[in-house]
Length: 73
Image (cartoon, rainbow, N blue to C red; front, side, top):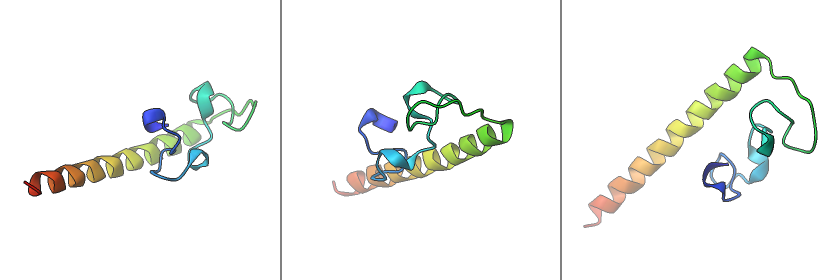
């Protein structure tokens, strides 16, 4: 979770809004209790592509917020 604040990777989406990777790390478990899910290369690729899009949106949001704060002077 970004910032480890319980919001999940999508702001306000909650802890269930992620990929199910949980605290066990990439590719281990399902994030919802013990599990042995095996990630294929396609699964990893899809998860990373989604993470890239989420990070792009977070960066865009942060840049907009910074711009708004600068404009308030």
